[in-house]
Image (cartoon, rainbow, N blue to C red; front, side):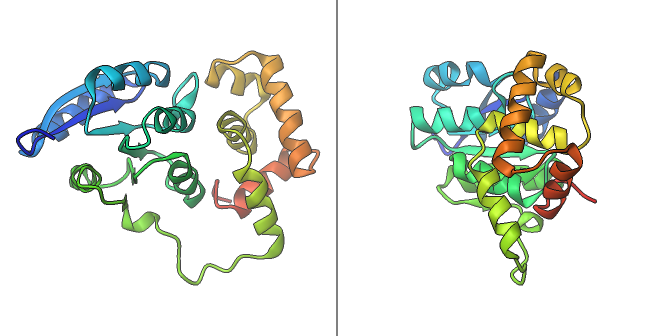
Length: 217
């Protein structure tokens, strides 16, 4: 930070969303330069060039996606400060983002001031998880849930993206279009995921996703 102003790199594939972020953040007296990019593939290069204090990252993007982008950026610079700002408010997304190297997580459904507060917090070296996203203290886990969670945690970022979409009822063709992948690639991921989870149907994938809190029943 220079002169106590926080420089920000926004990463989101929707131009309107990036414009909204700019307006929201630029209104804060502690925010400095704001740059933006529309996909994860260019983040490493732009991060190296701009050296932002905070990277505000969406998760659901075409191409390599947000989780893989965070992982690559953290490998490039272990001190990189990434704040996830995502429509996904399920606990497992928060967990995977933190595992990938993110320092904070805020839901896009949150109030505007929450994002600004989160940017300031992570820039100061703190971890910031929006309060409503924190797990319940008395959340009881059964053995089969723990097993599925362990398996899902070991899925690659792209396998996880495919798994979530299949569990929500999307066809392999729809997943391929959504993630800009070939149909055969998605079909292979589908086979690998089912094999790892030891299930045979999309309905079973959906049940696991519900149990893990990835999708609402």
